[in-house]
Every structure is written in structure tokens, then in C-alpha cells.
Amino acid sequence: MSRSKPTSLTDARRGARLAAVQALYQMEVSGGGVKAIVREFLDHRLGEDSEIGPLEVADADFFRAIVEGVVDEQALIDASIKARLAKGWRLDRIDSIVRAAVRAATWELLRRADVPVAVVIDEYVGIVNAFFEGPEGGFTNGLLDRLARELKANDLRHVTS
Image (cartoon, rainbow, N blue to C red; front, side):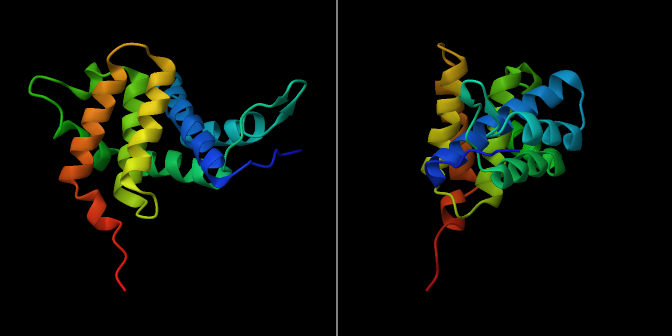
């Protein structure tokens, strides 16, 4: 199978994040298992050459880490999100695409100290804005900013010398 070479690490990770959100969404709506969905994306959607070119440039390892990380730690991730929702809001009230993006971003904030907080927030807000023209991007930005501050995600990213 031919794989497209990413133009940069940034592009490859951006593609991995988008694919991860799509995979998490697909798992939720179809009830599919993580292994089957990850395999489907790796075999048929990421970097696969088609008649019109690559379907999506993505870092396959980063994609797999996000999806499997969210699934493995979903209870912790969901508790972290629920604790920061406005009074009266429930996680299931959030659109499923936004929910998938926020879960993936929360996993990155918790587990990927190598990725700057601003990058995590910007990337996932951008993904949400690609799907919605309404207030969802602002909602996502506010929630992720609150999560990052309260989880002290920036502190996790400080390198000690």
C-alpha cells in the first residue's frame, strides 16, 4: 500500500487529530470497537492514494495514540470535562462531533506534555469550526481553555534543566 509523505510534522499531526475526531465520532454513532475503527482508518483513510490523490495526510502513530488513549481513559476524560461544564449542562447534551473533539483534546492536555497547550486548543477549535458555523467553536475554545487552566496543563509542559 502506498502512503503519502506528510509535508510536515504539523500537517501530519493536524491530519491525525482530524482523523481521530472522525474515528471517535464513528465509534460513538456506530458502536464499533476501537480496534476495528482504527484498522479501518489505517487501511482505508489515512494517506491512502486514490484516483484524486491522498485522502488525508496523517501521522498514523499519533492518530492511534489519540484514539486508543481516549478510549482507554474515557472515564477520567469525561469526568474532567463534566467538572468544567456550566451548571445544568450534561456531556450528552454536547454535539457528538464536538464531544469527540473535546475528548481528544482533553487526552492531549493530560497525556502529551510534548505538545503546547495553545496548539492543542487551536487545532481542536479549528476542527470544530470546520464542521460548524455557529457557536460551537467558541464553546470548544472556552471549555478547553478552562480545562487547560484547571488541569494546569502548562505546568506539565515546563522542561526542567
